[in-house]
Length: 191
Image (cartoon, rainbow, N blue to C red; front, side, top):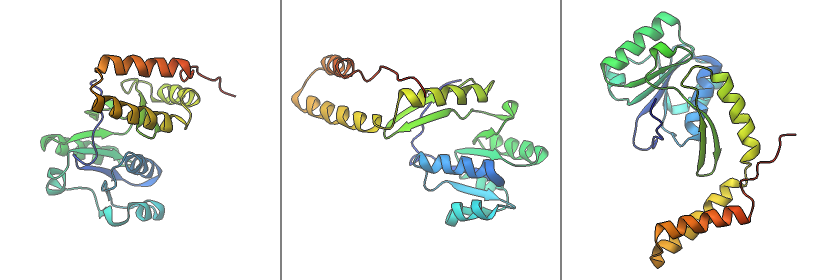
């Protein structure tokens, strides 16, 4: 697998499915900045329909809808329908992930930790998603919410250093020294 971080403003993404897993995926995409992520659902729960709002599309996507997408997650869809939808998406050069069916996936979703602009991900290449989740939960203790402010602080310093013409190697050295001096990477033990 090749790890990537996609800019949700540069790709068209959608979820096809119904129920709790589709809701979880749609919410994860929204947290990642994909406010325009579409939801294709033939029988959405009330909560799923409310969450999708104006981005709800009745039924599963047809070829015309698929051709407007770049990335599609298929969840809570009957196995035969999921397989057909995945094949149609691939034919139209849309990257597809069918939840818990690695053989139908072009990519795997990662376990993630978001702390402002800091994004930490864990992947087992789809082989052991439960283990990836366990590792993610452990890392949450090592990277608590205050990391969002730390990243902002370093970003501000880096911008100032760039304006001053400081070589990037020196900026990296200063950032490493600051992290060491403030003990940012001393992982607290989970309670």
